[in-house]
Image (cartoon, rainbow, N blue to C red; front, side, top):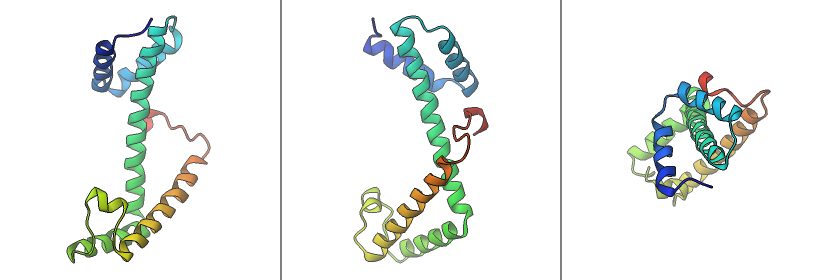
Length: 134
């Protein structure tokens, strides 16, 4: 027994509109009172929304940490300078695959920094930060 697609989408929308505290209360409720496949599905929706919010906050934190570092400020200043001179485009397609040599070097530099930063964050003790602390 599963939810109908319309009910599933409706419940997803309700979960998106809930505040963090209510979402965590629902998660605790479903952890204790899951008996049917519908309960498992509803708990999965709640957990998915919690995960999306954590991921969004983690990305915001990484961006803030990047901008707070000397390297990040320096790279952002270079990027602004290149954009002002028309040598760099902030379009999403070109951001992934820039045509200029400078753009490619910046992308390689950024990707290596992100991977090293991700490794540093993921290896911290207790890396699963509770949602209310983010």
